[in-house]
Length: 532
Image (cartoon, rainbow, N blue to C red):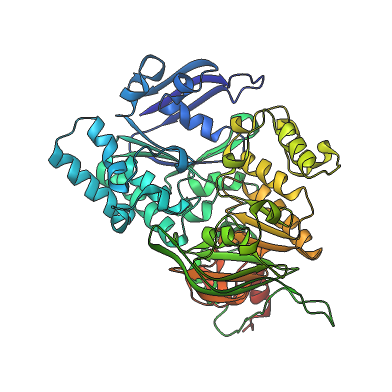
């Protein structure tokens, strides 16, 4: 179905190859997951499959890519779209219509399908991805996760023999991710569709894959084959695989539960304030409501955020997480209620004034990157905030020194995310707001970011992270506020919320229950279990 033969590619202006003599083959009807560290060439690889490389990106290309007997070098991308459906990392850049239903119909209509066939495909795609209720919504009113689901539906409506997806669940809530991945995993057996899916969060998808390809630095293939076998090459395997490698004889949920039957392992929050101190309330929301074009996003929200905490905002796509962040930094004004930051009413302050005390990184890092190089991006931030600092040291801290002379827009999504985070975290502002900061990041970089946020919180800063990444939340957050349809469903210590049966939790908790969230929790419980 897919053959890459000695493919070499360099992006325009780059001296280093993104792919170098790369050979790779995929059989018809396979579901292949591709993973590896940020910037290793995963997105480049799959952009070769639909002709975006070399036809759209330009640069220097050598070798051959053959899809269903068609040489991508000699075929226009419009023709290749009949063979290869594509879902990019950035759904914000992949939509062209104003309404959801029109967006999903756009591809079939351009391929001149009959009206009856087009309607059938649109309805199937809407229902499969769970966005039927959004059919009449304008795309600008959707959350990032909702828009991502629409883009997946639009690709499925084309019913291509090959479907290629780049981090398709990066902005989806746990329920939406499971729904989308379940639909995708059925396509090979139902329709014979070949699936190539790039993903960092393997706990979601590894059990559905037929094959795992692990890339290393420089787009080298580190492992390729059966997912269980290939996953041994991962630096950070999913939690259940990590546990399996540690506990001899562990073979999944059943044997795991058996060692815990007679024990109680409830654990409280990992965080506690220093003796004799009470963290100060830095942010207060009192009866806050907000609507987009008549659609309620938040209703009567009451929340406090304290200095020294990392608080995670979680909830389904469209529950109001991003809206809440924008109300705190003044980009939006509440329809009702009041938002106070550091004792001042945000409604009485200009956005420019708020930026002096509130750092904000949006969902889409490209929205805030505009200079020619990564180094220039950080230099501009230092100058605008009238700060001094060692640029090389800052670049090194965020793993960006090797990319310093490259345009931010030529980087992978995970690398762009790190540039945006570096820019907003340079200044010692007391409040930090991050919207889906782990999007596109590999596991190693996520852990480094978690350590950094814990360090900033320990220095007294107020950190609020909107995210669907439950494993990151479990390792990083002190508290969790779970939103549901614009209201606060629950707010409390991280362990209490993630083990409270609200549907947001870690892979270990799903397997073992109780308040066990990490492999080490299971090992501790196993050690404490009575022996016959």
